[in-house]
Image (cartoon, rainbow, N blue to C red; front, side, top):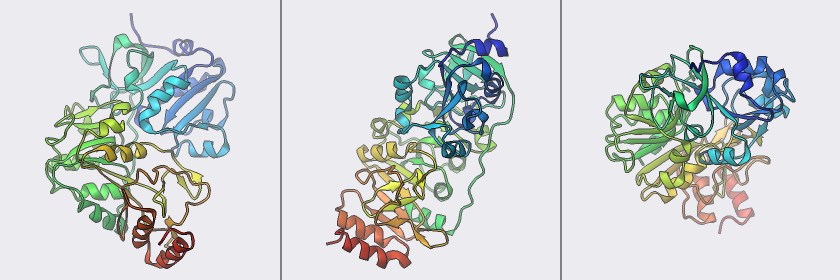
Length: 423
């Protein structure tokens, strides 16, 4: 019997007060969401749960109240306005625990996701995804939106036709993200980090200009490994230059390990039928206990603000919510347990044309701590690296002041002494 679904069959699958789970980024099934919105009056108190949504929709903005609503676990450009309007919920989390949170707090009624076409053995691939949905394969009903432009990838993201409630087809290009421009400050920060990376290290690299600059400078390294939550275009170049081969990894030797990928078509082409890339659930990739098994892991992430205790506010800007915790805290903990683990959190020393220091005595009121003072390892600006792990409060303050913009160092020193941070 065919599992191809029409509109009525899709709506009939959704019970009152259902919780529908959507994957991250290009796993978002656009046509299925169109169907839900167009038929929202046939739904009752249905919630859609998702991180990093791609498109702003009416149900996020309160236009389908009583029928369809959105719960976010990581804000994006599609959901920030809705959050500021108060028309969506935001659930705090660390990324590796999202599957557990969903299990404990939702009905897990249905998962809707984009997938590559079925192969000769009856398997679809979740393509650029494993994230928080892959581990529910075989346990929660799936409705797939099959897209022939989704790359077929490997790992624990394969789903057999017997494990789905049904599917529709929608062949459209994947969303690409614009690569950030690399500036002078990014290059200075990247050069400082490069000095700390050795041949044979395994890398977790986040998104942004600094991570891109770092990857661009690693082409002469050898035997690097990749174990990262988000896979980006920079890895393609590192594989092409023979910098990455994964032969010295401690887990999944020879494999590039990730939980989702987001970049340009070049990345998606690289992923298609590439057996060297393993997509694993986030509960594996981002679990600090699993991260720690990579004894030479180097984690590189970004923040927006640091105080003199070493607390990093990475999910708020100027005291207003911008994103969420994501995997930064997962990897900050993981590198602490790894035998030779090293964590680097990067930021420009100033904002607003050098008028505001991003290193301050205290975080801006309303800011949220993402990486705690107890987990932070190294902080990097264009002026240097502050080694914080295991250091006293006084030593931390001195180290952070030394990498602040010179125009603010005297003021920071005064504030630190006044508040008893320096002895």
